[in-house]
Image (cartoon, rainbow, N blue to C red):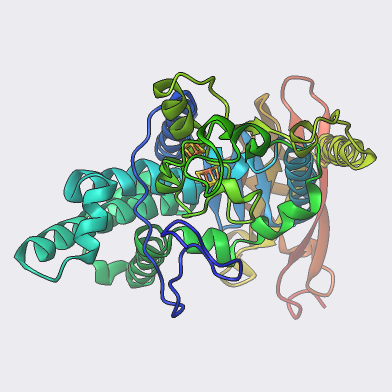
Length: 465
Ligand code: SF4
Ligand code: SF4
């Protein structure tokens, strides 16, 4: 058995005693690699830049968990909008099922953060510090000496810097990038909870992207298991064309004239980040990263054979059959469209303008003895979910009650405003310490009343028997 042949019951990343074999994929160039790199950088830049974009004073994506306020591209959601999340999750599930049933593991190869960050940042650092794949393999096997200590130390230092940067950007989505910048200028002890969270996440990212890597895809990723349920013989896969390639070069007992196109160079195995041999057929470890396609095309070009011995194809095509989409594909699409429509309908019909009256946090009332008046303190939380600004006026229609507020007239747009107001009234109006009146909000453009709230005012009981 050659170094490249594995017993069927052994993972490509374990040796005969079950210990981890660390994979150092060789570098590869080609059209699919170029395309992936462009997509990876686009996604990384999106992730790093988006939390810094502020429009109308609002970060365009901010998930403020303590306040339970979520700003997503101009739309604002609150804790009680949580049920919408169910539609989003189901929509994502049906979309990913639909995509996987047609294009296979395209998510793993092109968009999974695990693949994107490892391939673009961590392998770049590794390559710069330790050299190409074969050099890294050699260093792995070499005894610990000053060169190995230096290179490994430098690599892990740079990994740590990269992990910290990734984690800080991620936290920026929750805390706010400008607030985070301010926090990072202070001592860690002033935000101990956030500091510990940052260190823990950095450690997790560092271990996963720096060391665990393909093991996550092979052992832990739920999507890896899930995709085998939604794929069928017509789903797109990265596959080796056995009919064209076999019998491969150096196959015992096969005449030179009878050999197929595979020159048995093992380049496809050497570039594979999960260490598998695609010539053994479709395997769960394959993340459809296309590196073996580019590697094999390179070889085919050198030996004057047509490209595509390893290519994007389907099991049906490999067996000379026609692709046909099963009903499942249409069901996933229909469920996705239905979920999106339900979500849009629910969003469109949610209450756009709402007010919640809260009593002031201090004493429920104050007596102004010189005027025989009572003062009640309130707060009102006004929520308005629309990007067309609204100018509102807060008013009490009954002239027996005086409204005092710095925010009597205000503008609101796609936000949640907390306003303070006081109501002053004659103590004679109290009956058993209570009296009611109405607070209204008027749309200043149309003059129409848009919110009506009953106010329950309190005062001393004994003063007015
Ligand atoms: S077999 Fe090919 S496509 Fe699959 S993970 Fe390995 S290199 Fe990527
Ligand atoms: S890279 Fe192509 S030619 Fe070389 S071993 Fe793999 S399939 Fe065969």
